Structure formats: structure tokens, C-alpha cells
Length: 305
Image (tube, rainbow, N blue to C red; front, side, top):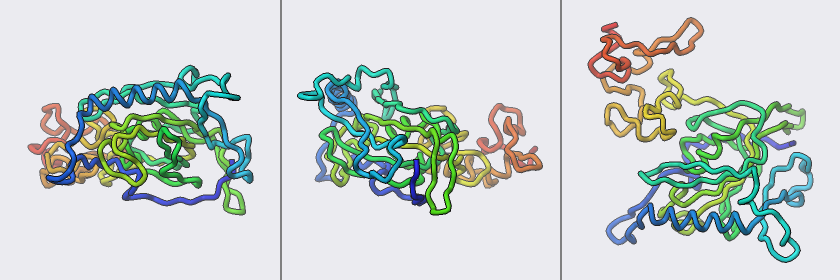
């Protein structure tokens, strides 16, 4: 697939941000019960999946190689398309349960091509193209050219679908500035509003809206957001793929974004060890032998080792 590079690191994502704004002040409308909305959204998503099929649109950008084109579209099964297979019945459709705000949500994703390159984690960065639509097929966001996304800064549903895919098997940068990607991840995710924007007000997205994102995945970069030498995914202490609820010292900054995780005055980087090539050594040091690594134990610093 030949694509012109548009490599932008988004530190703050205006439309794709995972931040929730459930209460805008005393005059705001009361937020609905998340469990109740989850059930309603799941029914809407199932109805969509049972009444729609997918196809590849080869007309919007005819200069692209149609054999690798990943512009996914959805059509209603009716009339001339009455014989189409519903998405719901396809073997490529997968389901996973994602817990968010103490509510279990069904997340549906269509794995059209897993990708043959590298795996990555929920806390890494990926080079993707994507398109966001509502269930009525109206588009609210898109990136036709590859763009870097920090997966900790996107909505939970997109994050949890993307980690099921891999990057391109290979790519070649051409003299004209384009890149040819081979065997990259291609798919779609159908998410309830609880894994999207829920009650937050967003441009062109009504509150409590289930969302659809289609995407291609090309490259990845492992991230260490706070520069402490520990990859961000290893700072997910409760192993729930949500980096925001791990805050050892309770200082509001989650561990993956905190250079001193235990607030003992010694930077985390100085309480872990690296080999001669700068690679992190595990298991982590535990100077007082209490079972808690030094960088997470405010009573133990590197000086006691």
C-alpha cells in the first residue's frame, strides 16, 4: 500500500481524547447510569452487526493500490444486497469484554487482517490511518494518511481493539516520499459509548453514542512516558491494561507518568538497574526484602541497597 507520510505526534488529542467530562457544572444534565447505557448500546451494536455487511471502497482514492486498499465501508442488507452476509455472522468478528468504570462492556472488532509485523501494548504508540463513524454512517473524524497515536490518549474501545492487531510485516520508503507497507493490520471496532465518549460533548457526536472506527496499523514504538527507564506497560501494576488507575504514591500522577513512583525523593530511574547496554534488568531491586520493589516502596531507597 503506497501512502504519503504525515507523521505527527499528538500529545493532546482534541477529538480522540480518552478524557471523560461527565459533569460540566451545577446546570448540567444528570449523567445516566453506565450499566443501563451499556445494555442499550450493546443492543444497538448487535442490531447494526446483524443488519449490515462490509465492503472495501475502491473509489474514494483511486490512486491507491486497490489490492491493499483498507477503506472499509458498511452497507445495509436490503434490496440488491439482501443476500449479503451480516457482519455478525462472520468468523472475522471477535468479541471481548472490557471493564471500565466498574461496568463490563462488550467490544466487537472485525479482524480483516491481523498483520504480520510486531505486536505492541496498550501503552505504546502506533502509526495508523483511521476513520470514525456513528451507527447512522455519518463520519466525525478521519486520518487518511498515517499518523502516530499514543494509545494511552485514545478512547478505551479503540485502544482495546488495536492491541489485538499487529503492524506491517515490512515497508519500503520510496524516493518520492511514499511508503509501501506489506501485510499490515486492517480492521474495524464497534464500541459502546462507555468505551468511547459516554456523556462528554464532542463535535458531531451526540452523547451516549456507540462508535465505529475502521483502521490500518503500520508501525509501533514502545513508550516510556515518564523517562524512568521502565516501559509504560510495565507500570500497569494491576494488569488491567488501564495505566490511569496505578498511582503508588497517590499524588494524582499515575506511575507511568510519574518519575518518582513512591514519592521518596529518589527518582525511579535511580532505584532500578540497567545492564551495560542500557537495558532494564528484572526482577526489580528490593533492598529491604519485603516483596515490594524499591521504586514502589517509600521506606526503601537506592541508598539502602
